[in-house]
Image 1 (cartoon, one colour):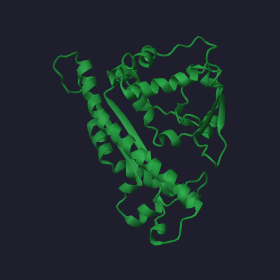
Image 2 (cartoon, rainbow, N blue to C red):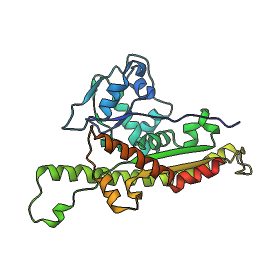
Image 3 (cartoon, one colour):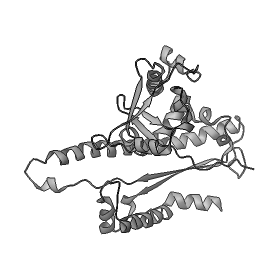
Image 4 (tube, rainbow, N blue to C red):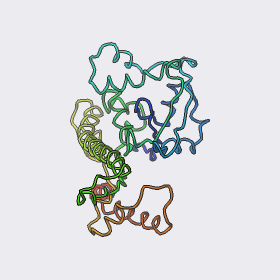
Length: 286
């Protein structure tokens, strides 16, 4: 029988000083010799949504060096040898900063969207850090999983284009919104493109490793029975322009009117069930 695993939800924030993505996982808390189970979900959510300039950062105390923690096998070698990829070296170098609690005594966290607006970097970083997707799942329940579903919810808004029709210099608020919005949107597209390209090679690698160099069969229950599904839920998929613009112009806010919430729930359901990738998943589950 195939191994089953429920959905994985990780809350992310961003280190204000280094721009590093910090996931609220025990692996990350091990790095600073702390216990995630003692940390409230509410404070993690507050850190994840602490928009710079609008809300204050959430601060963690770094206790690194008090629990005998050691970097994962191979990370030290990555920093010394420089024989690894640039991405691997970059990740290992980011981790090493937190091991010195004298220099890095406190970690000030802001909105997770600054480092990873779609929340996909946690997956990509894990694979990059381990060297391959097989190394990242080997020995875990995921090693025998047959279907891995990644649902990407992108609720980005539509930029205000009225300034394209005016000669006047836009005010500070409009410039700040454009500056942050453009950077996030471009980064979102690059991250999603990287994920889609990666899952193709991940499937092949897992099949090869499971089948141990032998004949690769994709029959149900066989060693090659593995599929990734990247399901996008985004307003751009709406065909009706008026409806699409309504949702893309909803403000980024902690409070929406009840009718707006109801409409968002309805459109999220429609976008999900109408996704070709989601329908492919449903077809493969029959």
